[in-house]
Amino acid sequence: MPKVLHTLAAAAAGTLLGAGLMLVRGVATERDPPPAPRPAVAAAPSLLHEVSERVRRDYVVGVAPGQLDRAALDGIVASLDPHSEFLDAAEYEAMRVNTTGHYSGVGLEVAQRDGRVVVVAPLVGSPAELAGVRAGDVLLAIDGEAVAPGALEEAIERMRGYSGSTVRLAIGRAGEPEPLQFELDRSEVQVRTVRAARLPGGVHGYLRITHFNDATARDLRLRLSELQAAGPLEGLVLDLRGNPGGVLESAVSVADDFLETGLIVRAEGRAAGARFEIKATDGDLLRAAPLVVLVDRGSASGAEIVAGALRDHGRATLMGERTFGKGSVQTVIPLRDGQALKLTTSEYFTPSGVSIHDRGLEPDVLLAEALRPGPVAAAEEPATDPAVQAALQYLRDRGLGRQLVLAGGH
Image 1 (cartoon, rainbow, N blue to C red):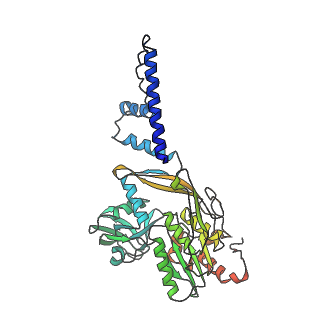
Image 2: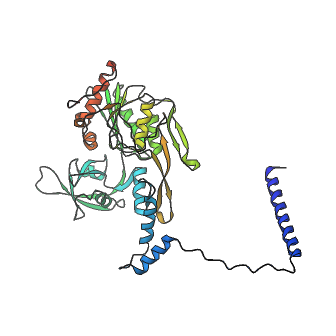
Image 3: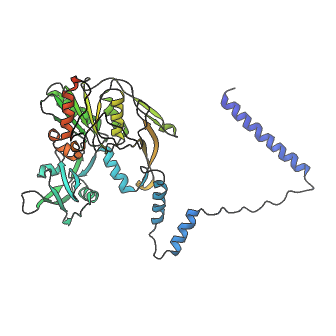
């Protein structure tokens, strides 16, 4: 008999046996009826419910509907770890933009410098680039409303909107006595996370990955192909400084592009889907040319997966400073009303079995403080960046054996 039929048969026998016992008990106790059932005792409300009701009823001012629920949700998730969080609809949409790599806006990459919102670069082909916005411009006002000091995220959100809608920007530019006015039509913008350049001498390349989204691996292959079209590369500087991570699969694909075989990352968690191993596939796009990976204290999560895998397999030399140390994986779980839960579900390990959580990765070559400008400067002018220059010198001198980069008397 199949296993399922055995199970059903056992269940049926148990039911009949139970009925028989009840029947026998009824006959044996006709003169002594069972006591009346006790009334059900209502479960005491939870402490969370009790406190919430007290606040709603007695707090000095009324609280908005849903305010306490949101505060409770935030508190519950925040008590777990720094990387888990409850996302409302707007926050979930912002995360979607970061991971998919496209949005409707004007196409400006901006950063905060000395409290001001400064243009790092307009994206190629974007409304901002076509209108003439330049790197180094300072964002002064959006639609006539001044940009508050330090309000980077607010400024980004105000520049986004429906494709075809218009936004007015007031821009401050060095050498211009008055603010420049731009009226831009928003359009679909593709976020580029990979920048490339040939370094002085022409035989070494530079690739910078700002973060990992769904398009990063594809963009890296395209940029590397463009570099190689001008001639074979004798080495590559892969700049992951300030890279906070992003989409796990994208980071794994980038590591795979420089490996022929072997484990890239292993993850452990309670849920079945949170336990996995990902291995490299055939094909090293750099054809075994030497590779230096620049890292710093802002290199985290996916950036550490890439750096750890390449170093563990002897494929790259890490140069810079100790990385951030975020060795956990978050899963985004959609909820009702466009909301979501970002929940830590796994801890990952490098191919050598090391967890970098709260530890980070120590570089093979420690760069002195003088060689560590911010990642924005590195992205704008890689050839003049002291850390890139040190990496390039390391690649040129690789035939002399393992080096120690000394600077500033260290």
